[in-house]
Image (cartoon, rainbow, N blue to C red; front, side):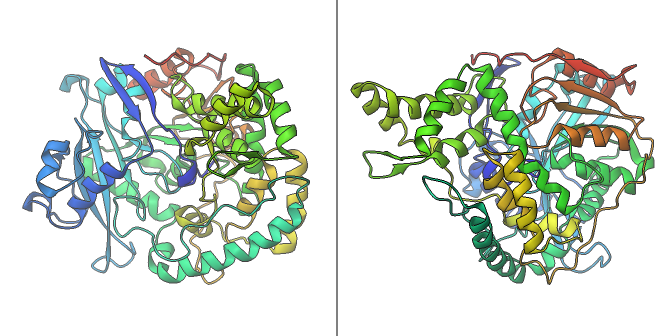
Length: 530
């Protein structure tokens, strides 16, 4: 999903041997957040009591934080931590502040080869940069040698304070019938009321943070971070929603751009209504996943039967089609490079569902036991709400009436018969209940430009951001080069482990020289886990 909501940011345990170490990339950042919250809460050494717009780094290893009673988590071993104080309202310096949690991995190469800082925004909005910090180890060694790598929890997220919280800020999944035909118009009507109630409560409890937490504010935070590290121009890598943040930065500060990589792209000209087209993208990525893994027949057979009946598990739970579909949707778009848990769980969901329905008696028993695993079941949190909805509703002033939502849903379900309904009811209702908010819309680019140096990279069947959005990004920024790789994953640089993708991007980031032409890259099967 383009604005990957927190529940869908699922790198769940992908492993890869990189640079002599085994890296665990995980969205479970409890230890990381606890460590950073200790810094940000104020019970920290005097070294962290700094003025706004400065960064003072301290090693953030588990050992360093142990005396602050933090969780013993080594996922930030080797990184430096800091906090970054910004005005809540950038027009009212001296008033209330927000504090961003920031981490850095210093460049490994000699100072003579140092190119500055590579900033990462990993998407969302709502995604923790800290939680995905180890993504740096998937990048080419030349990048880690040449750049300090910096990522952060944007305002309202994770270890940054204050964070969006309270009643209404975490919306459940929509209610969908376990079997039989789905009346999506009815599901949407119920969802419209539910999301409106939740959003209005969340907004009421977090109004100042919401109204100062959109992408424009995020772009000004990014510009302040650039100045704080001492780079005269920014080198930036944005994934998913991070491409929209990068485009917004380019519109506001075009003279400050050294190099940008937009990865898994948004359409920079998009409207709130246009965002709903993302509802159909998973139908394309799931198709690619099933083809690549030879699971199309088993999936078709399993889902056909699950449309008529559920699977009774030993716990008493009824395993439904939504458990299978939501597991696949969460797993196949991210990091199929390692053979780790992301694709493994998706494949297991298909295999176990099929065996529980069509296998021998022992196979059915084993499969139903496997389906008790929570990672193979539908999550309880929906794609609407929380910081995702808050930022989107700040970024776009247009609102979609309930009647127009119903008309749009008919197209979505037709174009995305597998996932369109489930995701469409969330995309369409994103801003229901935010009527009292005062939007701060992102600047829509002129027809072309500004002429910034950069690369636009995307897969052909991206299940989060439709490929057409990358085409529209390239049309908007004709001075950038496009790299397209066959596949269905979301994010390509380092994540696809394709030299066809990684080499030209790394060369560009280091040298500043773009490829002579746009590039097309073939699909490469996931590498086996070490």
